[in-house]
Image (cartoon, rainbow, N blue to C red; front, top):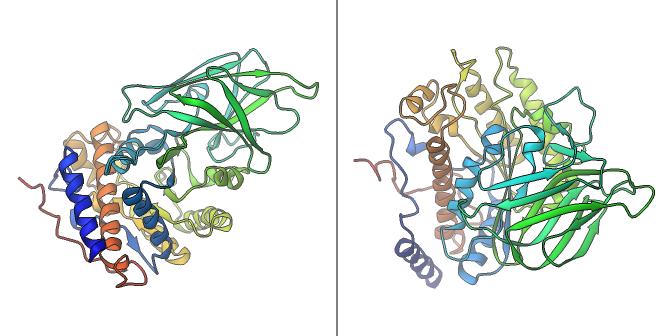
Length: 430
């Protein structure tokens, strides 16, 4: 009973301090709010450990939670992971961690998430996992960029007008750590190297103070050194909180991530407590979509991840309803949804069926009429991504609430498969 009273007090505190009640999201009559839940197909024991870590943060102010979110353009654009991370980090005071993963996307001539920007000097050669004709080594980000000049540099700025005012005092650089690599120098603040991990491929720097700006330069300290290859940078903090690593590559398919040879080792470097995978939009963007091929590829990717991180909970999200080539209703997404549920059952994962939550086949036209998608009826507007993130956050809250009301009280050995949620269907209906 004491725990339950503590939890009630926690939510009352949230309601008083927050501008909106956590469950409160914009109402649209075409959204299936009744379907909005995280589904477990066997058991949810892996999520119990995750929710206990949320307890440690919320009730004791202790620990850190690292979320790694893989995807394509929906993730790279930043609005979806940015909004979802904001909802997680502000649902209770003291949960704001650090910005997490960043990459100089401008060097690959693609868009950069809005809450940071990167300037560079020198000549860089880049590679993306969707560029199959290029022979390059890739890691967890699905991206790499290489310079052969010590005159090159990178400047990273966290925007003060971003979703949250992030700072960092640790910098984890994922890069080629072989003998041919230039020495990496952090210029803007006094710092020291605290770890060089050759297995997981990173150098970790501890800064003397919190910062929101980073300048990276290079130097040659050995005759063997002739280049520097970057796979990504994680901006971190020593403070308790949630760090959200959004890792997306425009146009990326599951086979594109399968060709990332360093994915496993570098994923371990990010120390994930929760992995979210939003993959399938680009796989299903074809008139010749093969569900069995999709299943086989996704099964291989999941197996690779679970082999190295067997106890980390994974959430598979079903892609949104969309149009093919701006003209045809895409019926492949229903097939993707079916394959994801099969994979969830096989690997004991959780899934979130956004396709049916948004309304199912051809529901994207209703989202488009309300200004929630781009004209291609494939991508979303900022408001659309925010609504998607809010729905995912609500689904997370429902699952976490079920844990607090049942497992934490000792009434269950796991979170129930059949989840008994409050009826929120008409919560915000006019």
